[in-house]
Image (tube, one colour):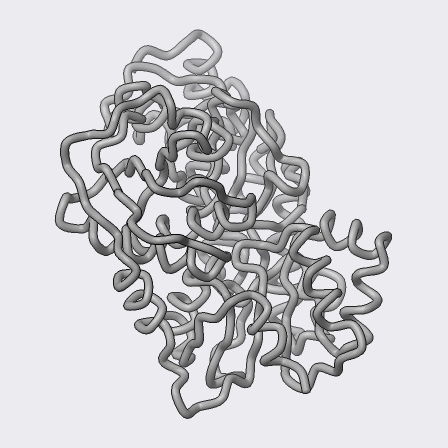
Amino acid sequence: MQLTKEEQAMLDGAHGRAARKGMEILAALGSIYGAERMIKVTSVQISGVSYDNLGEAGLKFLTGMAEGGGKAKVLTTLNPAGMDIQNWQYLGIPAEFARNQERVLQAFEKMGAVTTCTCTPYLAGNLPNFGDHIAWAESSAVCYANSIIGARTNREGGPSALAASVTGRTPMYGLHLDTNRVPNLAVEIKTEINGTFEFGALGKAVGEMSEKFGPKIVPYIRGIGQASLEELKSLCASLATYGGAALFHIPGITPEGDKHQAPGRRIEVQRSHIEEAIESLNSEQDLEADFISLGCPHLSIDEIKRIAQLLEGRQVVKEFWITTSRPVKQIADRLGYSKIIEESGAKFATDTCCVVAPIKGRFRALATDSAKACYYASAKNGFKTSLLPFEEVVLRATR
């Protein structure tokens, strides 16, 4: 790799231990993937924030970077933590876990990261411009940044994202390059797709149907006339979860969609594929959901408004988590939505979500509108799942 004088100085240790370690990580990645040089990034989003995922080994690495003088050189935000930073007791999080989670956040804060813990950083102040090179780690956010915003990022691991933060660089390979952003699979949608749960089912269907074409699929999706921000973030989450996709194009909707032609390889998505995807995630059957959750990825203010409208005058009778970022929750507070939701008995789980919180063994079955949440509820926590329309999820929690 060709390093600049400043980058070589970092690698030589002139900027401190943390910058040297960061540059070592990035140089190794660049060598593995054949990058010719580094490129400056404008923002970073780091995953592996929950102590449930990090453990002591991960925390030791973080602490070492903080004590080694690591400082964020660009705007850096964090993925969801394992608890609501302010109201963890209310959500039943053990005190020992909370102490360890606070140690994690203190290490990040010492390095200058903004401890806004969210999988939708683009809704909470970390919003890159079209064409910006960034280093994001959360899979759904990576897919959203590449596809919907038109920024450029590979799916970083937690250590490489942190390395990008303390150096302001990332190796120029993968989706930072024009050649790797060209679609290589045409996806023809032959049915209407409506609502976050159907867009999630679409991502699952496309992800699984594209497996036979190998990794690094960049779908070119035709047949979607319009889609909301919320539907697109749901599609990003499920495509990343079930197909490993980090970029897709939709002509007329995504910013790079109209610059490309449909590739020769082609699949069709019929109504039967959507129904099969939904059915495969409905494993709850006769076991009634005892845990209701919306916000995977984290909710927008419009989604919180819808929940408030649906819950007004109703009483929640099940454990119901409303997961979102703290900045969005603060907007909901000012608009009066939080008061309606909390008076119903639903709980805000800010800074965290049902995927990364330590809730294994607490519940038996989850009802949600998120295909991604269904995947992790089953694979990580052993829950049965129900994938339902947004409104029906809310009503499942009430009487």
